[in-house]
Length: 187
Image (tube, rainbow, N blue to C red):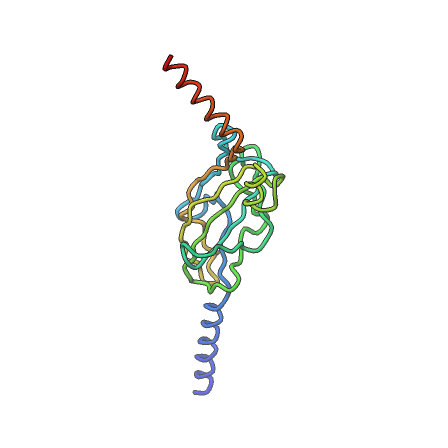
């Protein structure tokens, strides 16, 4: 009887430990083995909508417990984009699992992915301020998994583009050009 009580207690503790474990997310935007398969390339609006390619553009995962909450960067360095046939997809490295520290496995989290030109800054906001390419996915909700299940994938991620915000002087020149066309047309 004592052995049975001990086994039940150990199972209960193991179950609580598994639930209290940090959540993990599979940080890949292409995973043909997922159910449903995931194939969500990132596009480069500055290159006519071609897929983003090369190590100068990186992607990083951010999470929040609320859709409109404060998003926190998931640990690990940003992931560079692949080239050639892998263009449009970031390379998460040998282990695509990203840990959401302090988030219990099995919890719902809101995720966004930010991408930016690393040569223009170490964050998306810095790249934007330095007139580099940048972009951000729409927020999407994922339910994290409980071990020993594999990390939850990015189901709900939709394709997005990186772009450059033109300098104010460029916008002013465009406005002057449009005004000149209207004035010429009136004559």
